[in-house]
Amino acid sequence: MSDTQSSGPNLGGDEDVLVRTYLARRDTLVRFFAARVGHRAAEDLAQELYLKLASRGETTEAENPLALLYRIATNLMLDRARGERRSAAREGAWRHAAHVTLGGEDVADAPAADEVAASRQRLRQLVEAVAELPPQMQRAFRLHKLEGLSHAETARIMGLSVKSVEKHISAALRTLTARLGR
Image (cartoon, rainbow, N blue to C red; front, side):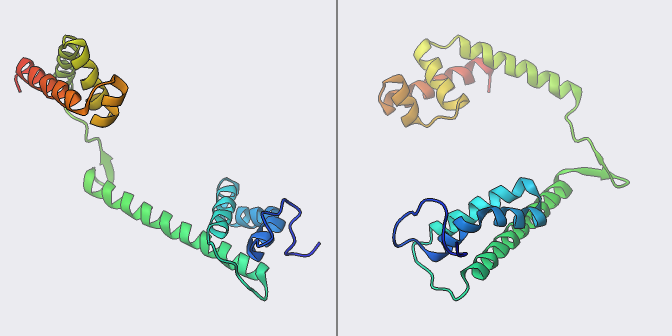
């Protein structure tokens, strides 16, 4: 079997030579990736390579499709490595900006114990206040504010109009604000 023939299913007569080459050499490509980035990322990169090839929407004429395939694979690894370096740099910058260090050691930036106790008390009061809301108002408030659903999603789940949901949430916020004194 040649390097460009697939032993797997043919996705169509117009299948791209790079996709055929990929399908024929997938196991070798996974080993290629694993040798360079480890086994965990190898399968992900192989899948990403396939998606990149299959979604191009154009066929490629290449003198040496295998060499081109490995060039694309190498570029994919380099792109991922660059992305990981950028991510690490962002995280390092955030860590530097958000953490206090003394003598090169991170200092816990946790709130004081009295602040934690006060926050827990406020949360307990909020939970109690929400539990005392009328059922429809409580459900709309929970779905929208606590579960993060949009007004439209909340309305669909509750079988109400968006306007009704908005009114329930607005009334709940007024009630809770008045009860909790904020």
